[in-house]
Image 1 (cartoon, rainbow, N blue to C red):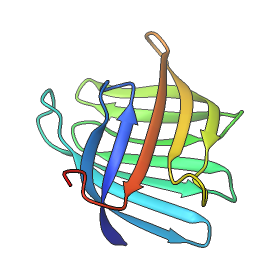
Image 2 (cartoon, helix red, strand yellow):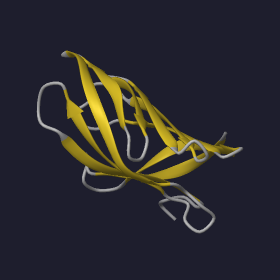
Image 3 (cartoon, one colour):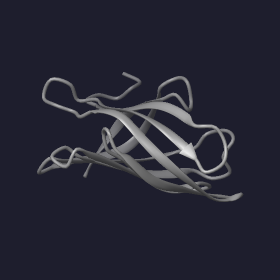
Length: 137
């Protein structure tokens, strides 16, 4: 894995942010990993995102105050869980689309709705892009 700067956009945080991370691309599987800490979190969260282009699937694994493993597949309903300080929250994930990265567009983007067993469904669009230069340059 090579070290890089990642640009991450998610409706969960509003503005895009940048994170130092790592990236690899082998046999149609792209992997991104990074750490992020937001003001409302006690400790940083470690993320690993695996994009299987041929399998048409994205998996996101998170560790930290909240730990989770979620699978995103276009047109399918998958299950996931969030392990929080309040207990485990089971969720159903309905992935609307995944725009896989290509030679013309390096950005991975996916849109989904996460429906917890209790509470309101949450719709989000997430994207990640490996920057070829430092974000501050």
